[in-house]
View 1 (cartoon, protein in one colour):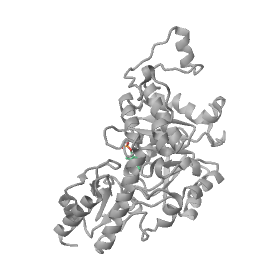
View 2 (spheres, rainbow, N blue to C red):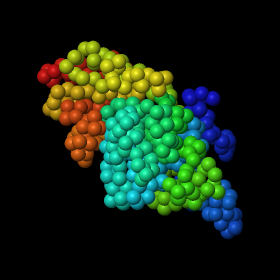
View 3 (tube, helix red, strand yellow):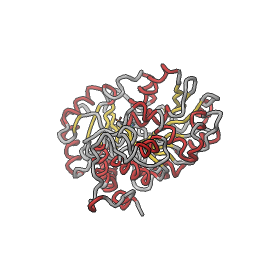
View 4 (cartoon, rainbow, N blue to C red):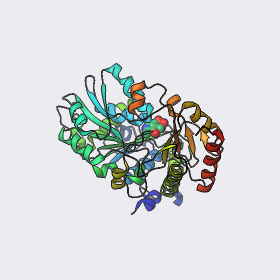
Length: 411
Ligand SMILES: *Cc1c(COP(=O)(O)O)cnc(C)c1O
């Protein structure tokens, strides 16, 4: 089935009483008939549920649908996108290991990578698609490559197939944060990525009513037992070893599980992911083209503009659009603040992927904790505004940006 049909049907099981939505299993624990039945579940010898921190049927329904959409083997849903990234990474790195990552990351991911330096896990940042530098940063301690499909907020586009080739030549996996693209634009696992993470708080949920994240594994990576002894210990699970190890250790034991109600809200929101992305990508393209043409003093960055350094790779990689985020450079921080304050339709807040258009000044908010060098590498400038384009009528958005730009006058 194709994407929009999968959004409605993938992983659907016949629910009790013929319900067309999975019930919200708002229950912390699940009873079994006998003590022996419960033992089997704890020993992974029988399917079933025991405790919602480990698994919950509503959460499973969400996991199964994302697994299908991303083209993977299995997923684990988490309390947030950050929890998903932390679980995906800490499942395979240990003290003394290293990560090689694209420099243009979501600020929260940079913060997390700094936090884990305390545990002697070092991250080397390289500019996206700088193949020589990436090769040069990989050494015998490197355990994974990390990148975002479309960097937030730099909006650089990772050449995923090429990056995956480099990872695999070094026997390490590629973990791809697909939040900004979503499976609608790009299924990373089909293009060489081994693990895809999504902050489902964003486009997947769509209406910003809950925080959640999810990681999806391809089931294909060949884990070298010397490099990944943690995974080797779960060898009996075959292609599920990576997932089995997480569920039976770090994920279960750190407790960042997804609440059943939030899984349910995601399942409802997701039904319109394709429709929303179609509209949001076309709104973003039109807004970006119009701003670029109409206001030469505003520098517009959007992967769908021919002026973008990432236009060619975006065109090659994405068949249905270029994403729904654009950034504007307006000359100074003062101009950026004035423009944000003059806009009437967008919400000024720290989020992306809502049905509503959102704006933010990344330098003073999401990248506040980054160093000057980290900001520069991540494409965050003092005069930069990020716009997450919603599903509003495009003429209303254009009119609002026009009045705001004309109001601040300085441009
Ligand atoms: C928001 C975001 C995250 C973090 O997700 P949360 O659900 O807020 O924890 C990670 N990566 C990217 C690209 C994001 O936009």
